[in-house]
Length: 166
Image 1 (tube, helix red, strand yellow):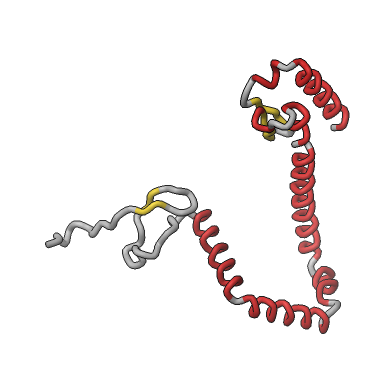
Image 2: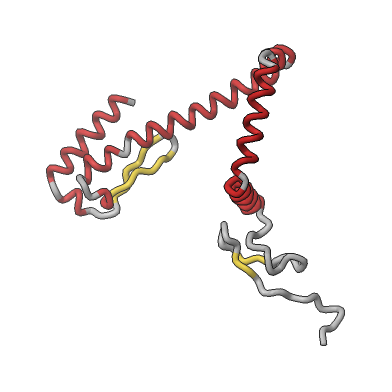
């Protein structure tokens, strides 16, 4: 028999997103799979929405169609909204600039992955690229690639050409 002054303990569970142990809510103990961290709850919500959209594709198409029809009936809506609220325009411009900076930085990083193949040849396991304070850092996982003198000359050529292009 359980004493009234001691709380009922349930088995701890491991969060599917972060992997931390958590005490499940006693009301939903059997069903709870994610801890109460905000990031984990956001992931859980996105996955639930994705599952719902996959199960109800006709509903999503219907919503998109209704939205298109509304925008066709109100073609000047966005222009009027921007004219009424200049703060909205400023904020939108600021967010767009941030988004484009991130996108362009990612493209530059993706293009620079070619350095890895030029230095290590076809064996990309010898090194990898990482970002740090505006610099691209090449980290070696195995020193074997530096033993070959041809790979070191390629390394110097690649670094010099990348410095000149930045």
